[in-house]
Each structure stands twice: as C-alpha cells, then as structure tokens.
Length: 319
Image 1 (cartoon, one colour):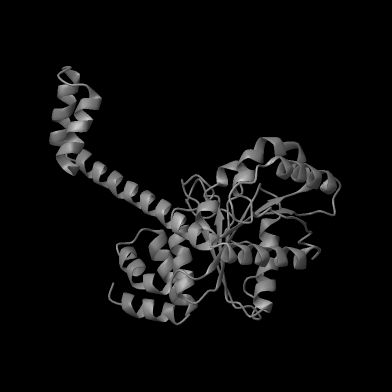
Image 2: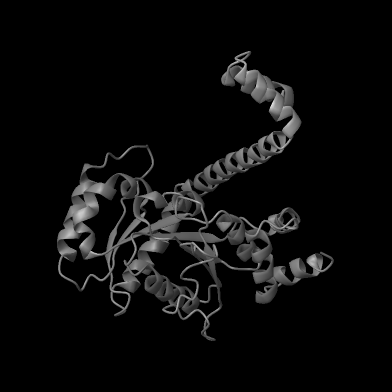
C-alpha cells in the first residue's frame, strides 16, 4: 500500500489514527505487516509492560481503568490491549465495546485497543505482542495487557509482559487449589479485588500459606509476590497496588531480572515465529496435490511408514 510509509511516520509521532491502522494490518496478517514490524523495530524495547490476568468476573477491566488513571496522573503515556473472547459468528472481539472502561476521557494520554483472541489458546491474541510493539513505537511508556479471563490457560501473559498481576475475588477461594500451580508460576502480584465482600481475608490467608510453601531459590534477593486487597469500583487499595507495581519494576531493574526476562521473552517468541513459518512451508508442500498423492499411494501400498516418509520429506526440503 502506497501510504504505508506515511502511516508509519505518523505512528512514530504518536498519531492515534495511524497507530490503529497499523495494528489492524498486523492483526489481520496483511502482507504489509512484516514491513511495519521491521520499520518500527528500532523504536521498541523500552516500554514497561504489565499483564492483568485472572478468572472472568474478577473486575479486571475496572481495575485496568483505575490503573490507567493512576499512570496518566503521573504523566505517563499509556497503551492498553484488552484481549477478548472471539465471537463464534464473526471471529471479532465479543466484548469489544468495554463499556466499563473510560478510555476516551480527554484528561488521559491513553490509547485503547480491544483484540479478539481468535482460536489462540493461552489468553492472548496471536498479534498481541506485535500490537504492543506498535504502541511502544508510537510513544507509549506503559502498556497494559488484559487477558481473556479463562483461568489457568492464560499462562502466555507471563511470556509477554514484565510484571504479571493475577486478579482474584473472595469467591475464588474454592477454586484456588485447582489454579495454584499456574498462579504460583506466573504471579508477580496478587490482587484480591472486590475485597469488600466476605471471604477476602480467608483468600488472603490461603495465598499467604501457598507462598510460605513456595521454595525460594537463587543467590539474588527473591521477589515475594505481595497480596493487594482492592475494590476497584470503590477506589479502595489502588495507591497500595500502584506502589507494589513500581516496587516490582525497581526489583527487576536492581537484580538485572528485567533484561533477563525480556531476552527470554524474545527467545520464546523467536521460536514461536520459526515454528509458524515452518508450519506454513509444510502447508505449501502439502498443497502440491500431485506429490502428496504419490506419498499417499506409497503409504497405502505399505512401501513406507509415515514416520520414515515424513523424515525423507523434511530432509529433502530443509537439509
């Protein structure tokens, strides 16, 4: 598309409309997507990314709205990516309106984007990390990524962000045993939202007991995830949560863990992208119906077994 260079330049200057268009191109895997990512790459790598995950109904959207307000009040430029369930009919974001989030308020330097999870498991959309790069290139200093809200299958958020908030409610107490393995692995901060409801104290004690049993390893000071009771709708506990977020950020920098996390994230993403490219090559090979038909005949005649034939095909194409 001939206007692509202009769109990229406007995005780099912070233009919201151009930023939105570039994200749309990436989200639908437009042929221009690789060009966009290559051009914006030098302008990425410094934004602080925060993942917000947890079961449906935990109040994540309201919490994100309050955090945006807090960051913007400190003069940070904020980007929000909210990954929603996909509509079974259109494939679009089912909750894309996000009526509870006041992201269009004029007193906030915030860019909001709702994305469909599509068929991707793990709580994130396939283009989430690339969309975050576009937001970063447009000048966003803080990027919040809110996941679908499907419980323990949302572990991908830990691979895409610097700090992970796991949001629970007092009603989560009965299911904490089922979720604890995943939560212990990914949570940097526990948020007990709607803590004005009965059961918040018992959930806090259960989380404390889990943390007490978690082995602390490594020579550097370990981060013990704090437990922050909040009521986002009532505005309670938010300053304390805000402080915990920055405490974790400072811990990551002081222990050099931030660089380690980001390098590990890039390595995992590279592996994923390579696998996706190889899968595409395999699809193209199988589209050669004449050759594929010959392979099938050999298999049917028991001239070769599937594993041996697969290895021959791979050796011929990739070695």
